[in-house]
Image 1 (cartoon, rainbow, N blue to C red):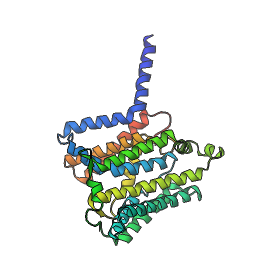
Image 2 (image 1 turned 90 degrees about the vertical axis):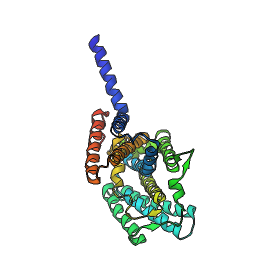
Image 3 (image 1 turned 30 degrees about the horizontal axis):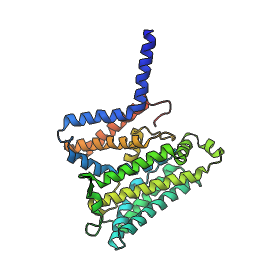
Image 4 (image 1 turned 45 degrees about the vertical axis):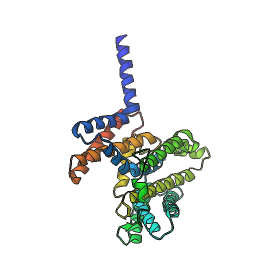
Length: 324
């Protein structure tokens, strides 16, 4: 009887770790941050983290859609740069805020569709196609900006980056929260979300059931492209400047956030909420090291090690399907 009880208890612990491992990683990291820096647990620091990582949150959610189908999008960081430059140049031309946003979103959508067509119709590897798009988008950002930062006129866009609602809650945080809620609903409560998860789990079975897999793949890459240029708009709104240097390495952060959040790079497994937790893990790592005045190069090493440890925790506490 005692052995049976112990087995049941151990099984319950294992199931608990499988279900909540991502949140446990975040809680442990929070406790460490609060214990080593008195400046961490302040309202000002929380607002700074929210503003700084709202763009990465949205970009990571777009990446999650691609990963759910078993794909990858390495072009997101370059489209952040292209989006910021396009937004700043459009505002400088005097066409207004709304039209500038629409033009920027169209560019992201077009870039995503192009990648999606080559992946779904031509059957080229997503890694190769999006790596090529990464180079092309960054090159386009440098070309249209002449390789220099582009300043938006006046405070035309900085109201978005520096604005607050409900007292001190940044507008960017509210925007990111809206995306999180929308993506959570789409993944869990719509046929579109269920189908993209099914494609990542068993693409052949979905195709044999009569579903146009190619259309869904084109859709997820276009969503990723749009999310990426929105990240660029957010980056430009925080400084009032668009530059082709924005978003460097962001594709790796977005992938890391998804993996820390339990997404499987083979597709079919992932969560919008846990992806945001993955972003918060990366945010806390960067923030606490900045507060401790750790130089940038050691930061990269420490950040990489923590990502490896977090991923190993995910693997050893995940269910049958591997996280990577």
